[in-house]
Amino acid sequence: MAKSLKTKPRKSAISVDIEMLQILSPDGTASPDEVRELGLTKDDIQSLYRWMVTARIFDERALALQRQGRLGTYAPLSGQEACQAGSAYALRPEDWMFPSYREHLVQVMRGQSWLDVLAYWGGNEEGNRIPEGVRNFTISIPIATQTLHAVGAAWAAKIKGESSCSIVYFGDGATSEGDFHEALNFAGVFQTPTVFFCQNNQYAISVPRTKQTASETIAQKAIAYGIEGVQVDGNDIFAVYKATKEALERGRNGEGPTLIEAVTYRLSHHTTADDWTRYRPAEEVEMWKQKDPIKRLRLYMEKQGLWSDQDEAKLLEEARSEIAQAVAQYENLPKRDVEEIFKYMYAEMPWHLQEQLQELREYLAEHGGDLPKE
Image 1 (tube, rainbow, N blue to C red):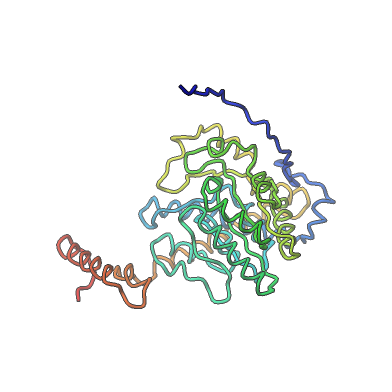
Image 2 (cartoon, rainbow, N blue to C red):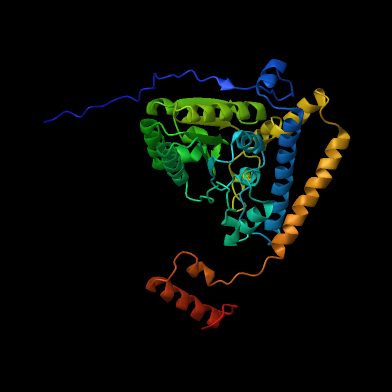
């Protein structure tokens, strides 16, 4: 008779020393030499701050619109502005950008508009139409699927001898998906110029990072695939810019992909269909507010004589006006035909969609609706 083998749980002995990159501390201080090495001018720094503040104002307005029934389900970005502005600023126009559903600021910095973002979350597919010449891909709602697309685009660029890289954004929850691991493995084998940018905001909806992985860091997952792994303070815009710029340079120089773990925090809900108070203590949120990326950069600029209260007042007025104009344009968009749900994908509608469309017409005819009848 075979004996049953009983084993005791064994704590992993694997420990990887990953040092977090930080240049700008929460109190707004930074080494002058480290900042100088970034090559950012006074105008660059002020521009980055303007982008971040405008994104925060947009976020607050979009959340209010959803609560008023004027916008569909929306994914807030507050708290993650430095991750998005710092990384987007390092990109070149020829680079490919693959967003998840929270990269509103990256999209706009890369040639789309706040109107596009509002239209998308308002259920208008025009918001997903990328302007000609802009190398942004459409928003990906499924978790981690865009990582594979980014690797494919980078591989194609490498085969064609182009200097472009690809960058793909995702959250910590995406690292639990198989697509993420397949993408890193393929990128490592074929040395594609891909930057995997993980915005580790500590929660995959309500699941904390500690229940996503036993790894001490997400950055160390790169080791298994033979690629570069970097952990950066995601609320430090200088560190994010530096890490992304260096990762892109490695890609352009034929040195392969990089996984960047930007440690940050989602200050609001996962989406407006979520309630963060159900799974996060208020004390935790308040603690992270002390690390606010916008406040941190403003403190730095004030210490350097680059910003004043007058500058702040002017920026707030301009940003609110810009977002108000985008909201007005969004609410004046022509009403879209519900039938486009079925017409959008195929040149000729297949039989199964024709049946579904007919069912919808019959339903609306019985229960009310403005879908035109044939």
